[in-house]
Amino acid sequence: QVQLQESGPGLVKPSGTLSLTCAVSGGSISGYYWWTWVRQPPGRGLEWVGEIYDDGRTDYNPSLKSRVTVSADKSKNEFSLKLTSVTAADTAVYFCARMISVAGTWHFDSWGQGTLVTVSS
Amino acid sequence: QSVLTQPPSVSGAPGQRVTISCTGTSFNIGGGYEVHWYQQLPGTAPKLLIYGDFNRPSGVPGRFSGSKSGTSASLAITGLQAEDEATYHCQSYDSTLRGYVFGTGTQVTVL
Image 1 (cartoon, rainbow over the protein chains, first blue to last red):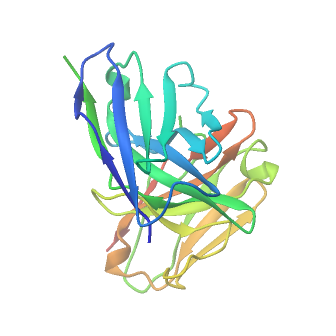
Image 2 (cartoon, rainbow over the protein chains, first blue to last red):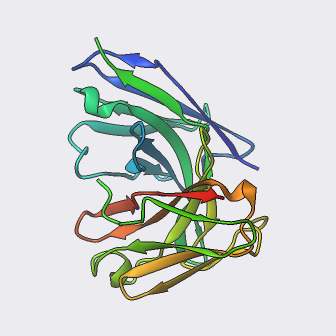
């Protein structure tokens, strides 16, 4: 059973850069998966942020695309998120997740526990 | 931005059947994109409940079922149990937004 664990600063200053890492254990990040970031502002719904595939392809939420970078380090079996020019609107619990295809349908099958990032001076 | 609309809350007594709707458009659910459902207990990560409109992953009880028709999908919980108190999220893909989209979330309360 694959496990995911987010890590990174819980407080980021406005206009700064949010940086998070997701460590994957119990399985390799190599393979037919999209490794994804999803966020949830306090008291609100889930929002897809971006993802990276095994071959390095990335895909981002168009509303965040100019500020988001997702990368992967296969040697460490982890992937990362960088979000620049943050504002209070970026305050959220950030989850890392694995997207898998079963019978041609892609869905999130494994999630990290989530980490709260607050943007505040 | 939640483009899939769900009722904010539903409730039922233990043993009853409740349904949660997820309403989209012709650019997501109605466009043939599959719907997935996740259960989120308070303070925890979402957990996959239904994938591909109606498929249950191994370990998910049979009292959870999914369906889809037109631009909407539904999650039904039969034989409601206290442990089913959680927030439920639907998810699909939107061709105009070119990305994955989630519903607004529904809080299920067991009376």
